[in-house]
Every structure is written in structure tokens, then in C-alpha cells.
Image 1: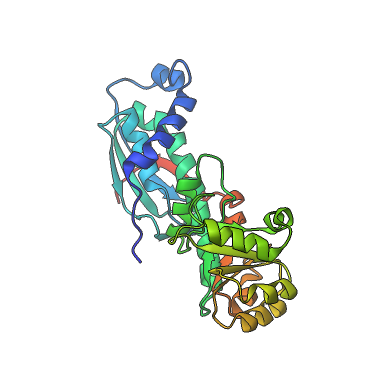
Image 2: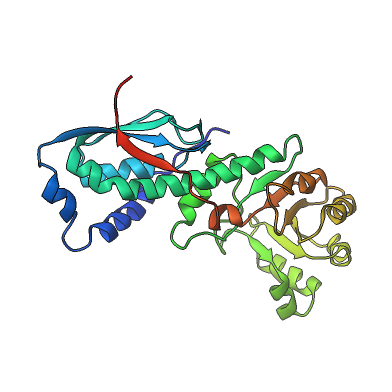
Length: 285
């Protein structure tokens, strides 16, 4: 499925807040002191590592909010693979605006490209199995919208966006309800007809109880591949199977080989390293 950009109205508050945080109470006093007001400049966002791009719309908006006269030309769209020295985008216009917006633009672009890059590594590692790589709610506060977008840019899929778009019954819900069956019944009684229900289990014994319950997805938590394979065999396609728990690039293929439909990883959003990207003066070849 082609990657669809987020509407500007959804990302502008994030970029605006980041710029205001950086500008503080007096603006960019270094740039204003050193750079002549009418100086024009042309720069390029250049990859310094192998990776996958995400976040260009936020970078573009950072420059434009400082000065609409800045032009931003994309060379490697979100979802593109890049290698060192690849030009991701070129920027031209008032030098002050470009230098002032540089850090906010790079913060978003490097962070989101890092998420896309790590997601893509997992996606490649599970081929040729059917499992899809998913994110979780383990996101940076305030950035969930764009971090989940970055997962899609890396070829992954999104889990629920919040507490309100699906029911996920976890161990603490079961403990508070008294038992697994009671928790599922209460969830089904309360759920709207379009709302999915997922149930977390951490043993084959729990899974056997869940087999005749009205759920849509089962989350197989912290199970090794050999146990996951047995779980998938027990489910027999009654509902989707999702594996979760300390999955890495090194272990994800074995998890996928168990036959699960989904593999969720929290670290791709909360701990992915940035993709190193710099803004340099652009010299046309």
C-alpha cells in the first residue's frame, strides 16, 4: 500500500511547539547577529548512514513556519532507502530562516527516519513469512502520531493508536476482573460492533481457555518460538495471532517462522537510534 502523508493540520502543532521551544523569548540571537538579513543560501539534507527516510513533511514545515520564502525540494521521499552522501532534500531561501529552523527540522527527520530504518530491518528479517511488524503504545509522549507514521514509512503496520480504538485485555485487567472469562465477557458486552477485542495470554493453558471465547486477536506474550508454534497450531485460524516480548532483529525471523500473523515491538518507537542526517551547503554537481 502506498505511504500516505499526514495532513498538515495534524503535524503543524508539533512543529510549531518545537520551534517555539527552541526560539525561546528572543529568537535566534546567534544567527540574527551573524547572518545578514538579506543573505540567500542553498543547503541540502544529506544522509550520513544507510537507512530509510521518514519525516520530510515536518522538516519542510519547520523551515516554512520560520519563513514562507524558503523552498524545500524533496529528492528522496519518505519510505526511500538512502546511503551515505545521498541528498534527501534541498533547501533554498533566506539564510537566517534556514539556519534557525535547521535543528528542529533535523530533530524530527533524524528521529522518525531512525524509527523507519529499524522497522525496515525487522520487515526485511521476517521475509518470506507472513508476519507483519507492528508498533505499540510505547511512544514518546506527544509524538505518537508521527512515530506511528514512521513505522508505516519503514514498511510496518500500526497497532492501536490509543486506549479508545480497540480493547486489549491484559494481565492486570484479568486479575482485577477475577478471571479470564469474566474479563472477556465484560469486554464483549461493552464493545461496539466495530471494535476489536484482543486478549493477552502468557501460557498455552490460558490460550486453551481463550479458544472458545469471542475475541478477534490473541496476544501471545513472551513465548519462545517453539511455544509460539504450538500456540498457532492450537488457534487454527480462529483469530489473529500476535507475538510480543523482547523481539530483536536477531530473533524476529524465528518468531515469524512460528506462523504468527503479527509481531509487535515497542522498542522501534521508544528506543530506535536516530538516522544521522546533516544540513550542508548544497553544491550542484
